[in-house]
Amino acid sequence: MADPRTWNVALPEGAKAPFSVWVNGEPRHEGEHYTVEGRWLRFTTPLVPKVKSKGFGRKMALLAGVGVYGDQKADVVDLRYQVGGRVQHATELPIIPPEALDADS
Image (tube, rainbow, N blue to C red; front, top):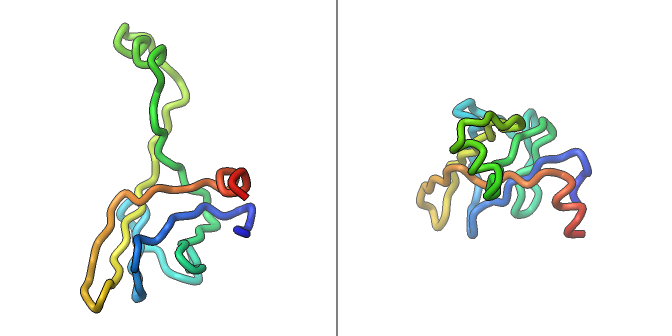
């Protein structure tokens, strides 16, 4: 089970080290900013996940020119890794907040 204070990013299928990780274009380092556990990158610094949808009512309010509070820019996690000895890149990997994994447990 994940630590309840970690933000989680799933590694792509077959991803192998060495890993190079960036959050919002800034390099992050294993042991300092994140750890690798199985198929997960575990971050102890809070990350902001992307919101899936604003909902119909909220979209209509925005179209009508009514400001809607609560929009927060999501963090972007990018990764360089290896599969079969070849370097691969993944961008905008989904961030899973601590409470989301607890709900799945």
